[in-house]
Amino acid sequence: MKILLVGEYSRLHNSLKEGLKVLGHDTFIIADGDHFKNFDVDFSIRPTLFSNYWLIRKFANFCYKIFKIDFLKLERTYRFYHFLPQLKNFDAVQLINSDAIETYPVFSKYLLKKVFTQNKKTTLLICGDETPIIDYLLKDELQYSILTPFLHNPKLKKEFYYSLKYTHKNYRNLFEFVSKNTSQIICSDLDYKIPMERMGFQTSLIPNPINLEKIQFKPLEVSGKIIIFLGINIGSSIKKGTSYFEEALEIISQKYPAQIEIIISRSIPYQEYINIYNKAHILLDQAYGFDQGYNALEAMAKGKVVFTGAETEFTEHYNLTERVAINALPDVDYLVQELSFLIENPKEIIAIGKRARTFIEKEHDYVKIAEKYLKNWEES
Image 1 (cartoon, rainbow, N blue to C red):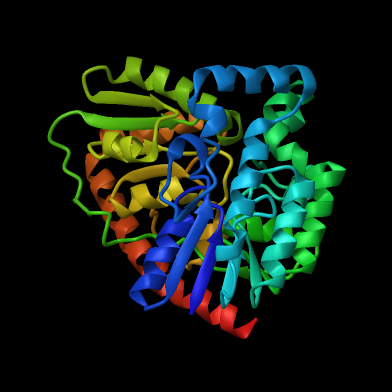
Image 2: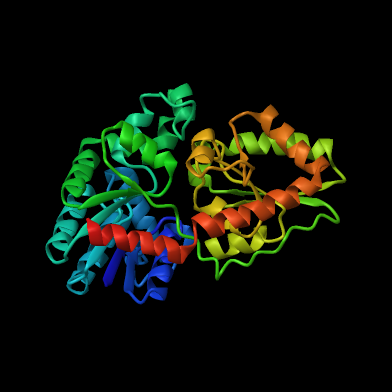
């Protein structure tokens, strides 16, 4: 098959592409590389003109501040349009989001209509914010979610602009347009499958693909200090409950000053990010999830102990009887308790790390996941 993957947020599409290539399928990604993360793509729509040159960037910022014109979105539109002649005759096209092109919805609809008409079939992947997801989370029916901080404090609305934009009429219309023109909807984990189904959508769950050939597993050794890593993405820190981790680390650093080392990074490129946490024993990911996101899964593949989403729904779905990750909660005392237990019981760190790798091998191997995608595309 000849496959086109539109958009990239977390390296999901890159790992899927690698699995598809192992199976002998020609696969291409068109995206902007997800901003500072700078993921690999085949057709780049990264807005270099309005982001790389100081004077032009200043002009773009001025126009956005005064006239609310986003030249970065306009440049992505132009670059995507430029590639349209090459984006045809694919057997399967997958959008990573209804806003996969990351431009104004009116331009997204125009460009995607071209993509839909010149290719065989298209699938919509739900692996992040989306209109039905946000609609459901605003009902506040789950014990917690990425919108919990906003629901508790509406003054945070500005910080949740990216999520709440999906409730605006233009983005809602974009989602409806995309969903009507795609053959099926796939969710990457339970944090998206649960809301989508409760909003009446029929979806398939295909776990995130992890390229185990590129991620080396090293059994953890605790002979010196226990290293705890917190990677902060400034743009999503509130949604991930990062402040709970920061408070917990302050307490832990005072409680075990001679037994731990704490490493914190802020919004750095993907490759630099993974290199920094390689020596860590424990990685703090997110406090509002039911299931794991991509960063957590890659760390688990390396054998790290990850504080992330691992709720009852997750353990029941995968029939787990032992912990493969620590279920993080938006509760500082709970996080301190769990961290303290691991620091005082280093053998448990080693055991969880081994189980984490085994779990990834069983449920997230990139070639097995690519096979699942192929089956879904062929049957849709």
